[in-house]
Length: 515
Image (cartoon, rainbow, N blue to C red; front, top):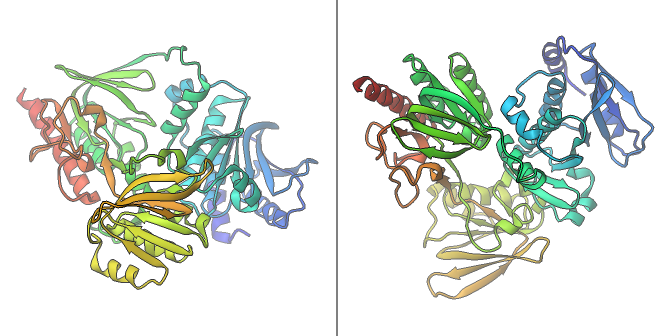
């Protein structure tokens, strides 16, 4: 199953795992069982530390667990982890052996507070680009916790009846028992927070930790944040970078063809390169953290949701932006059950169904074009009286026979039956008439919202929530600077964010020298 090139790569990756790693397979009569065993045998053949064993526990679908030195780790794969999930499988082996990026001591302390036993299931699609992030994060949570916590990746393609019974209409979809605890995009910080909310005693105090004082603190690990941290530390300033995920929104960008001098790259690769560049310098990096509070003063005080806190002379906010939601009744209730944000991940779940796309910009029109090849019918909604996308995209979408366009439409409510989306209400802005359209799904494509909430009461922001900055990246409050998509600087582009990050770091250095 695996070609020679992949096997050679795995031989290098799995050199000296240092532990006996067993891929423990349950027998199954499923037609794909032989394919699973062939894959596992091929992977195991790349290292003397890997071997495949079999149990007598009959399973309805292909299924295997990963054991370490003869003991279960709590990591299970139900289905064949091919496609995007092949990486999750390989990363799981490395993590079980104690290799690769694992939660640091601060995150491990939070994970240990979770009440066990807990069996987590993540339903995925092998074509989903967001699913591996969730699968890998939960596997790392399980390894950090130890006995009592398990995680099973489940390929939804093998169990359509189970998905229908649960009402799953989007992936990744994370469940504990009969409750969905997460759906869609996410990161390790967000998942730990959700587990804490549900399965940690709220009265149990979080242990605080003083990280000390820094010359510069950068909030955000995307292009602007990485650039700011590198330029700061190169000036000899003690620098810390706080990020929910290194790479930020770049992680979710597929093809990048306009980063000057780089003909083509993809988001995850660029994010990896940013991290590699940061590691070349003595930048202290705390990933998978959320800032809970920022206090002004001669020294800015920053508190994290992990209980950690520190002070700094200069604070650079490069927190980027997130996908904008409609903020209408019913939307949050049906995320993952008819409301989706990624046509590439969730589109296949709406095959031969009727869906709406909200947003007439480039992303919305591109989503409608993509979904038209999968869905029976696509209805594209735009708030203004005409589409905002590039003309070439508008011409393409208008040529598709199963796409209709509704302009001057203000969405007002997502309608569900308790299990899934069944309709959407909107107002015709030309007549003020309330309309209802029967639908199976709604894809929201209305742009990005700046992540400025943590400092919006300290610095000036505009009506869109963007941080107002001067030509050098200074905010309205001395000692706080901002760069990238979170600011009023026009044109939200990677190359611009990188330049703005460098500029603001130089400004902070200049201001410190003047003091």
